Image (tube, rainbow, N blue to C red; front, side, top):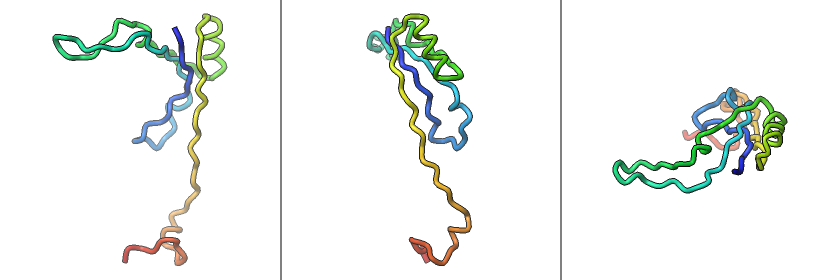
Length: 101
């Protein structure tokens, strides 16, 4: 039983940062998923793969894993670069790339 502690990244379709504050403790699968012979859906008998615990901070998640004796891997979040741009720069005379006309 091995766990991964991480802060989920935002969806590519989102511009907000609403659900990026929580940290998640998720167990790694112990066995591979296999297709069901009748329906073709993939399934697994591993119940821990369905568990996702959410914590408000990294320290709470690490403390929980240590208290329960769960070996874990801590994945540091990647912070994207924020580009400061103004709308007026689209119409400036000294643009790096000219307009298409």
